[in-house]
Image 1 (cartoon, helix red, strand yellow):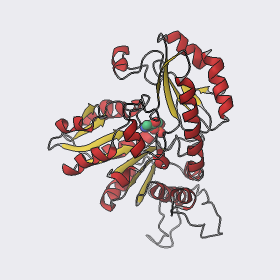
Image 2: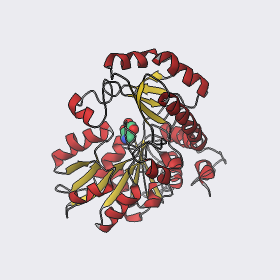
Image 3: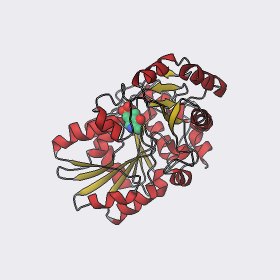
Length: 379
Ligand SMILES: *Cc1c(COP(=O)(O)O)cnc(C)c1O
């Protein structure tokens, strides 16, 4: 089955009771047993739920994995991965990381004796000097947020395999439409399904997908034991979202390209961060690793004025000023005052998050309207 067919049919079967084409929302916490232990595979909805199960099979299918696990949020999914580790174990992570992942690693798991190294991975060789016998996990995010850096997953996977270290890839920004990390050596793919997989800004959810049975069993044990599962209604919504992932992503990519090119030619714009430009430092890797370049575009204005950037995001009418990304509607964010406000100015500027940086999640509206909106807002 090819990808566009998988988004609609992958891992799916029609409802056994009445032939419903979409799996019913099994809004139940428990299941009747005929005799103790006499059940149909479902005992209690933290452990198993048919709607969540249908979603988990779809997730496995679109990422070319064998097992999918759905969680109450992206961070709950990451939390489950780190719980594979023991005190003293070490993790090597991308330095330009989703802020919530960084907070979870440093403010929760460091207290439990897990050691994190944040490494600039655009040159995969930088990882090697951090590897020792305690290294158990490499955590990669690509493209990164909000600077759109690209990490060579294949190169990192070779290193991970050589040293028998697990490799997890946060595939939230790219989605399996653009890249399938399990096929190029990753052991775990993680998603904030809140973003492109759900795709309609109406649900918060996380996911893990793996190929290996042993690893799947360990993660399932944690999912059930820690209990950060998602509900059946949300499972239904994300399953429905996945069915249009390919056509949404195609349009996100087309519109993302048009917005990036418009901004690049604009006299008031200083830098545009989008991996599709040949001038992007890791354009060649992006081109080899990804099918297209996605709908996320960041930019800075000439003069790097904080107030001017705020004015631009306030002036936007079709782009909504909001956190999050990956929905059908276009969103704009100002990292220095929003998602990255808690990071000291000097530290955030080291990774490029300057005062005028604006991040766009380009939606699937008509491109003429999006460009006109940017035009009136930037002036
Ligand atoms: C949003 C996001 C997360 C966290 O997911 P939640 O669903 O908000 O918990 C993790 N990684 C990336 C790249 C994200 O964009």
